[in-house]
Image (tube, rainbow, N blue to C red; front, top):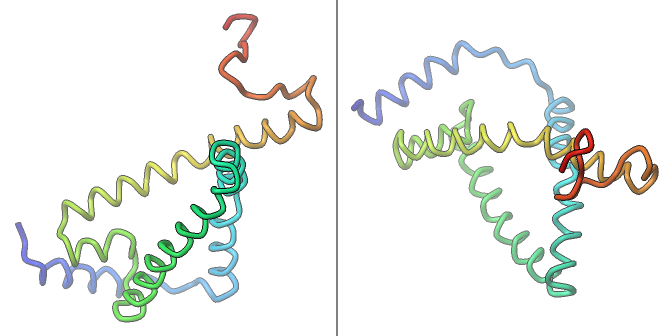
Length: 146
């Protein structure tokens, strides 16, 4: 196992090779594209269906907790402006194993976005055009078979 300093030296060497090509406008649109999606619509819908008005309290609590996470990442990115922050900062603080776990968790979350958005699109379209886009349920048939 290498020391923590060797990780930092490798990171600094790789960061020098990166070309900064994104401006403020491009970064803003990337962040907005990551925020806007169907997850927050379906999340609030299903939470309200299960918990009723108490779902608002859970959203407020989750928002406050996420604010702490966002502020920690903002502070770290200002102090150590390196690429790959979501896996780089855990590597600095907790080592390679934690960094690998977070890297794979981020990869799996990124891979599952497209199927979730496809299901959301079919669900949305089913309200406007139910004969063409039946809602996805466990009883949806494929080629006449369940």
